[in-house]
Image 1 (cartoon, rainbow, N blue to C red):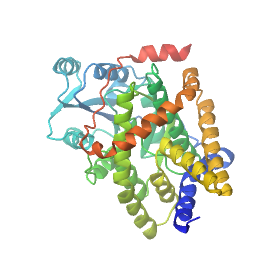
Image 2 (cartoon, rainbow, N blue to C red; image 1 turned 90 degrees about the horizontal axis):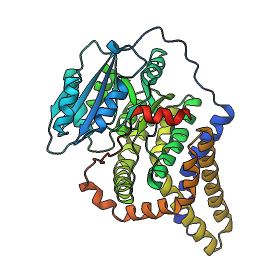
Image 3 (spheres, rainbow, N blue to C red; image 1 turned 90 degrees about the vertical axis):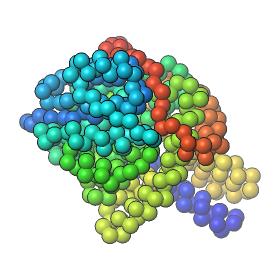
Image 4 (cartoon, one colour; image 1 turned 120 degrees about the vertical axis):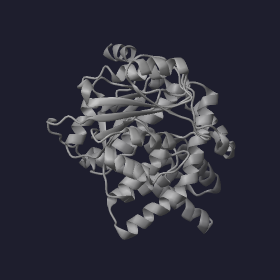
Length: 398
């Protein structure tokens, strides 16, 4: 075997197997943080960056107002970037703070920057939600519990609010996997969870301090977690702080979304990895090292496509030991994928979706071909699921 190819394969083997090894260690040796009863009630500024949104905002705000949390201890701020006028007027009449903005090229970072001057000293922490999110009635209680127990950054658990199509179920499946691999498992070993992009809380002063260092069009969450972890902060994962997130429902949406994610990953992988390595050289710790491995690891579907390719190549070339190593990687990912579904008590529909994974890989493969187009794509994903929080909770109780 060519030495260069062998080194590349060995490097990728280490990157691909690290997270699986970490997850196994967390199950064998990890433990969940113990949290005392909350004796202090944080006041939250709930910020919802919204670009060309409609009715989903009404249901989002409705779910917030049904929290089992003192109503005087949170305020909702909607960053209105060309949303439906009728929806905005309805929200304004309910006392929601509307911050009107318009940018030449809209982004979540710009919207969050615009919110800063409206968030006064009376607020303790900031919560960021997406427009399509719904939150469980106990969400603020769970976030508050983690914050008053000494954490400065808390990520809630994002789960699907719509499972009507194969694509939404496949999207949900990857979320379940990452919740376990990149959030639950590291936290059990006292390492940081990753930030999901919404459904997270940060102490107010820290949030806006870090935000000043971020000026990206996409991948805001990745930039924020890198700065926080490299600055010595630990990100807490709260599995009971549930955020219901809309999943893509069609092939076209799936391809566009994955293309955008792959482009953002490819664009940031070197920049962020170099920044993390520099930070490791000046102040080594396991949290930064863990983030480096996560940063270098490609998305799940890309890992499986790579793994299948290496199995085939090595088998045809007669490198049977390498083929077996890659086969063991594939089996490990399959095992943990099913294990995460069992531990998460996933909806039975998602189990049947495993039989449609070839569709996922085919669409992921198509998204690779058009990755160069992603630089011109709008970062906005259209939202059409108008499910209310009551509907979701009633289904969960069955």
